[in-house]
Length: 254
Ligand SMILES: NC(=O)c1ccc[n+]([C@@H]2O[C@H](COP(=O)([O-])OP(=O)(O)OC[C@H]3O[C@@H](n4cnc5c(N)ncnc54)[C@H](O)[C@@H]3O)[C@@H](O)[C@H]2O)c1
View 1 (cartoon, rainbow, N blue to C red):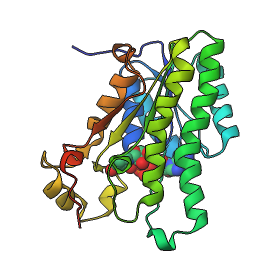
View 2: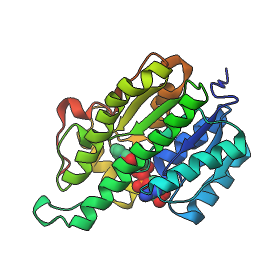
View 3: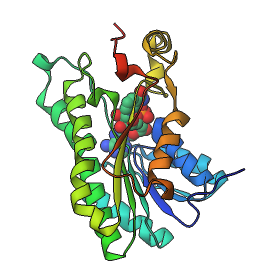
View 4: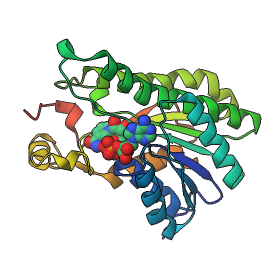
């Protein structure tokens, strides 16, 4: 039976021009939500929203989630367009590889501003709206297995992913009294346009993933949609790791 868990709900999904965010946005629209689809790349956000619009309401809103003012504008846009806001998926994240000893300050701060700032300030402005409007909203952050297990050349990225999981726990204290839940999904190796640029990606991660293959984007979106659905209203401050078992053993791909 076709499920429609998000009818009459509005969701913002960031970093959704491609990859995991795109799948989250599409899955939400297929289940009845109106989605504001964000990407820093204007052309990509418009293309993605147009494709998803064949299934329902999906509006592009391009811009950089590292800018707190942009997050405020995006929430105001969602409310102006749909008269509501119920779900936040702060998914945008960048992976800038580099050895710790040579890592440049500009790369470090860019990773922090996008991965942590993008989650923190979108949750802040959405949280204020939820409280002012008596909405039992849901907030979801996209973490990573690299917030659980060290990986070559990803020290800064790993820090940011632990940070968003801890942010979810802290927001339990501040937002639970209003019925707002906050969780994270932590993908393992996942097939996306970006990861598939590496021709070795599938074979390398298939060998070391206990379940035998990297995730596909619906594997991540399925967990994400559960966490923002009414079925998960009593779950808050938690992270679901979707990694085919990798963090149970965590062998490195090279
Ligand atoms: N793909 C994986 O294997 C994997 C594994 C673990 C965690 N993750 C996490 O999942 C999330 C999505 O990963 P992905 O591989 O699908 O992403 P991706 O690298 O393909 O990026 C998705 C989109 O985000 C956009 N984006 C980048 N910076 C942005 C910004 N500042 N503001 C708005 N949009 C921005 C990009 O333009 C891109 O279209 C990220 O947080 C990532 O860290 C991915």
